[in-house]
Amino acid sequence: MALNYSFPGPSGLADSTALRKDLAGLVVRDSAGVVRGGVFPRHTGALITARSDMRVNVLPFEGVTVRGGPLFIANDGAMVSPLLDYAPSSNARIDVIYFKQNESSQADADNLPIIGVVTGNPSADPQKPALLIAGAEELGTVYVPSTAVATNSSSVVITGTHAFTAAAGGVVMVRSSAGYPVLPVYGQRIDDVARGCMLRWNGTGWAAGARSILGEADRSAASPYTLGATYAAIPSLSAVATTPAREVKVSATVMLANANSGADRTARLRVFCDGVGIGEELAGINIMLNGTGGATVTITAKHTPSAGAHTYTLQCLASTASAVQAFQGSLMVEAY
Image (tube, rainbow, N blue to C red; front, side):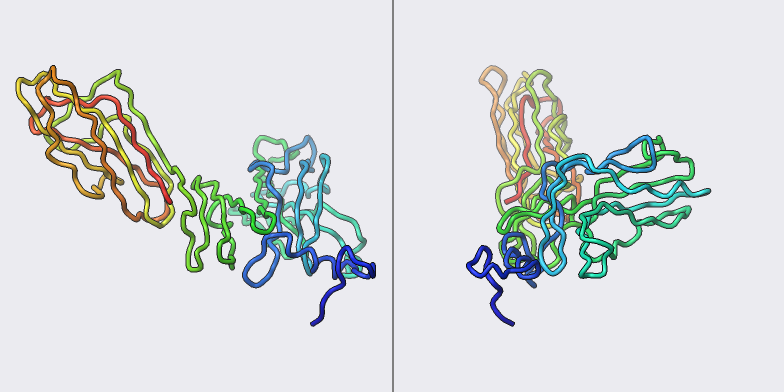
């Protein structure tokens, strides 16, 4: 082990191998010091698109491959992939499109940056082939059924599957939990596109690093909802939130008014997740006789759901059925 020649430096002796080590600190790395390869995000869409032949277009991107350290590669125009194999005679297959920097010193054919294809095996249940080529980074997949005559055939499915990377200290975008860093460093942040929230590695798990709104709903006052004597969800105050497996906070506000029932009434509120009450019930809400105005009530509840999609509702009941009405309101699910 020794210090590498610096770059830039007075000796001018930093070769390709030394440069990769010198530049490794500029890109997100895991706790073992391994650079995270992938694409620096411009958007979340696919980087490969269909054509009228058996190739795919590759859209502009900036990326990093890893082979002894980072290799920075930019595609500044619409590249074209090599020709994909023609469609199988039966069933279907999945091909993987990748980018790579060839290196003749590593037994590659030349020193050119390339777009490559790994051809899958036809099957009634085709599986994506493994990308086992040193220094290659996946861009996307192409589902090729037996009926395909071009990549723009109606039965062909193109999927963007490229991983995202970021500058050191930056936020790594991930499509889902499958893309989470395997050995994250303490403090690493990710933007989970599927969940719509930011998470931070605290040394033992992924925690919401900042306030994130996971779901929300609003109800207008145009159409009052008449409460019954048993708990029921207030229409329009329902939100589907995809949550991490950690504590979330649900806040709900609603305006209640006496439905000219001839007497003072009371109401109760509670937040529900997937039909199960969470937090404490807010009881004893006085709803005075019509003509004295309504009551705007706020309730909050916290709980730790399993990771995934959940439906949150604000439910309410009145001491006497049809005696109390709900007007405008809002509901918000947040993680911190």
